[in-house]
Length: 243
Ligand SMILES: *Cc1c(COP(=O)(O)O)cnc(C)c1O
View: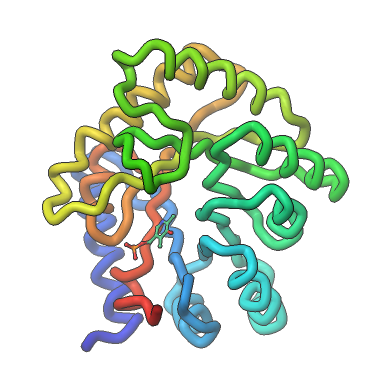
């Protein structure tokens, strides 16, 4: 079994190589370590190895961990919320997280906006999209995009409304493709993400759309080759999850 330090080193090499294949420098890719089910010792160890971005998918599980970490580490840690958010948890998300990857409906954008206005802070967010049509996945349903015009036009309407929310800074897109054996199977989804990003940049040039949060332990190298700027890794860094 390898240590967290060894895994981080190996992953960093793979990120650098994939970045090079995509003609970019590794610094343009943010590694978000997904720490769900792991306790704070794991987070502290990853911090010692140089990681600064951490992500959780459940608000309840995350808050005590973020709280504990705040007491133990310098304030240069960035917390990313990557999971489904219930509307009534929006205030907690704004209090405890620095980024949200999972804006998947106008209602949650409105709640996050209200909480951000009340806290007098600006919250960077990504719009989560579902390009595979898997029913188990959250995110705006864009399966069949770009051929499916009606889904697309519904989405443009939603985007316009989300962009009008005060104190939210829309920074790009996030997706969670199906789990597959061979990551080549999901390359077309990552390509579509880039095409969608370009389409949004044309339609809504008032924001930059600079981030694509895509790529997990099984497929992050392919995601980077296709333009990911944020990858979200759990298993590749920390081994199998506890639950
Ligand atoms: C758990 C999780 C990840 C990380 O998954 P791994 O396959 O362990 O790398 C990434 N993104 C989200 C939204 C997650 O919930």
